[in-house]
Length: 71
Image (tube, rainbow, N blue to C red; front, side, top):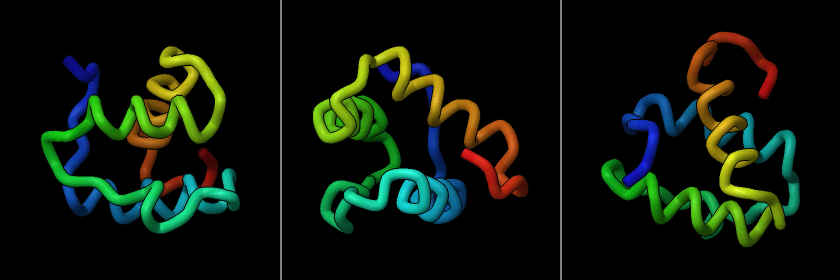
């Protein structure tokens, strides 16, 4: 089970942050449906070639301060 919940409005902001940091991610890579956080984490792990802990940490950090421009 995913360790986080991402709403549609939060995802729109988070997607922009992810695209800035990882400009090789496509629209398809960043497609997300609320409730499918686990699927998103798994996909980002593969595309970023990073561990689950890194991906979850990055997403949580971004969600903690959506107003901040940093990821």
